[in-house]
Length: 410
Image 1 (spheres, rainbow, N blue to C red):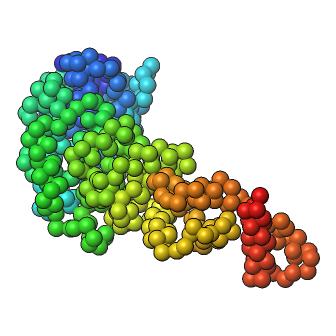
Image 2 (image 1 turned 90 degrees about the vertical axis):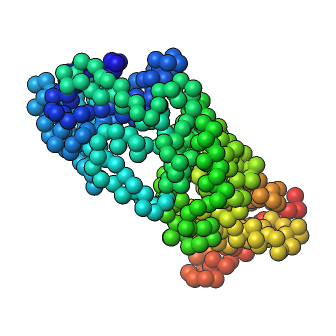
Image 3 (image 1 turned 135 degrees about the vertical axis):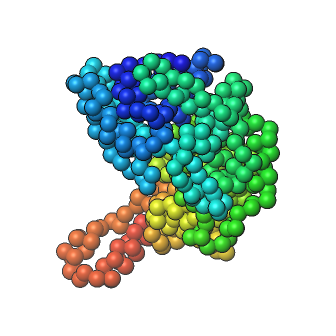
C-alpha cells in the first residue's frame, strides 16, 4: 500500500534508519487512509506521522540525519520515560514534516483505571494495547521506502468498513474508562457507532462501577483515568470535536455518569455550553456546572484552581438562594449580595449559562447593575478632605447603593 503525499526520500531515509527493526505507521493516519480508500471519506492529509519502532526510538532517530538527502535538515527532542521522540524533518521543496517516533511496548493495568505498567514489546503487542480495533492497524514500512504492508491483527479494517468501534478485550473500559470519551469523539467526528458487545461492556462497567474509588470520596484519591486523564480527554472533545454530537453519544451510553449522576440526567448542558461561549466561559466549566456536585467533580478532574473556586461559589449561591427572601430584594440589595465574594462576574455568568433561577435579577445585574458606579470617585472624596481607609470605601459603597436605589424608582 502506498502512502499518498509522503515524500519517497523521507520513506527511504526512515527505512534505512530502521535497519533490521520493523518500523510502522500507526494511529489516525492509517485509519483515515483506509477510510479514504473504503468509503471515499475526504482525505485529511498527513501533517504529521505517528511511528512505532521495534527497538529504541532514539537510536533510529540518531541514525536518521545520515540517511536523509544532503540538503535536508533534521532536529528532535526526546520525552517520556520510554523515549518517545518528536522529530522535525525539512526536505528541499517540501513542507516541514513532524514525526512522533515511539518504541514498541506492551502494558498491563495492575490497578484498574490507574496508569498502566509499561515495558518494551513487539509491534503486535503495541497494537494490542490500543483502544479500538480501528486504531490497532499498522502500515509496516518497507526498508527500501517502496511502500508499506498492512498489519491488522484485530480485524480493524472490517470494523472500518462497518463504521463501528470495537474494544480489543473484555476489560478495556474497566482498565481505562477514558476510552468511552475517545469513542464519543470518534463517533461524532467519523460517524461511527459502538459495536454491540462493546456497548454492552460500556453499560455494564458504568452500572457496576467496579473501581475502588467511589463518588464522594476524597478527590485526591481518584485514579488517573477518573481524574486528570478524563479531564484531558474532555478538553479535547470540547475544543476539537463536534461536541454536541459527542456529548449526546456519551449521555445515550450513560457515560456522563463518569463525571456526575446529575449531569447524566441533565437536559441543560447543551444550552449552557452555547451560552458559555457567548459569555467567554470555559466549556468544561459550564458543562460541570449543570451537574449535582460540580465543585467535587472539578476537584477530581483538577481543573484550574480559579475555575474550582467559581464552581464552589456557584454551589454556595444556589444553596443560599433557597434560604433567603430574595423576592423582596431590589437592585441595591441584589448587587450587594452577589458581589459579597470574589469572582462575582464569573459566578453569575455560570448561573446564567445554566439557566439558574431567579433569572431576571441575575440578568439585570449582569447587564446593568454591576456597571453602576458611585457618583464621585475616591480621588474626589480625598480632595474633599476624607482620609484614606475603610471609611472611604464604605462611603463609596453607600453612594453607589443610593444610585442603585434611584434606578428602582425609574
